Image 1 (cartoon, helix red, strand yellow):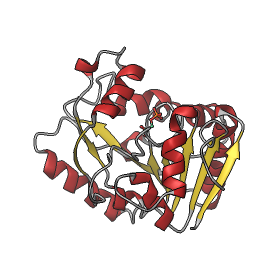
Image 2 (image 1 turned 180 degrees about the horizontal axis):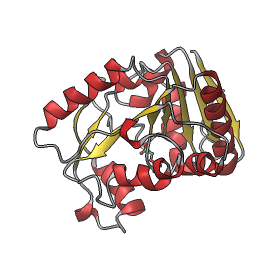
Image 3 (image 1 turned 180 degrees about the vertical axis):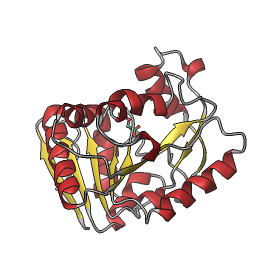
Length: 244
Ligand code: PGA
């Protein structure tokens, strides 16, 4: 397996180390095409990027993993809003080069194709940051019978609706969109470099299954075992079920 696994003490250390990798990547390639994630996991990392004064993102492009279906870009629950609030508005990246799938597009299948074409046009993702769901999902690729390929429309599982409802929708599951647009698992795996972050005991089983278990679409993050350059940065709680 080509995955490097780094265990750190806690969320803060995880965010610091991820930040160091971001800085290094930016130094090596000021025109990096970033693959970005939402959720609570990368917030600490994004905060460090926002607080850092001498990082130049002006030549970068970014593509986010996913977006809820039906939400307009200025909806406060949309991932577009999240990214603007937590990163884009606070660094010097050009927002016209920051892309997310459009969850409110009239024709979602067309939107997915368009998104994939845009990623291909810039030569693919150079550096992808990922979180992992408690069910092993990456992006919104839920456990299933086969690995998804390009960007596609996903039915969210009850587990994901429950996780996200508790965290972001005040436990009101009715408000959580039931579908989303997500980059595919195989597409994510094509990124030239990937860092995947996990913090907390509730991620321990997913992390152990993805790293120690077989490569299976039932644990979408296990696809990373097949990738050349993957770094897991996980805190002690998330690593508590790992066998290394
Ligand atoms: P979280 O979500 O960062 O909010 O834990 C991660 C994920 O579901 O991929």
